[in-house]
Image 1: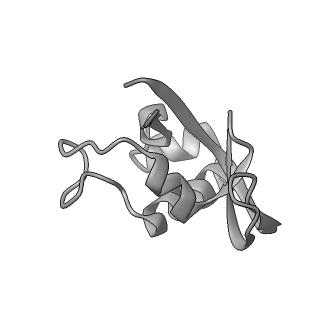
Image 2: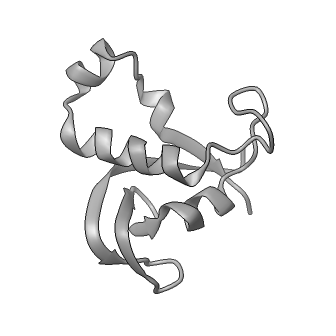
Length: 93
């Protein structure tokens, strides 16, 4: 994994810091600012051990993770079976 990115929250009705597009659902990250789920999914390194098909999670799963991170505390996420590693992805160069 060259570089890691962490999903830290969710931002409704915003703009993508990566491509400038208007977004209904923005994914806040620790290093790239707020990006669209499609942009983030394209930048993520494929991991076939974690995700089937092309090895990427998919935009809808990325949006779901962002909403969970925004809404729930770390303790609530742990009780639902989500650990910190669920929100960290490798970025392609």
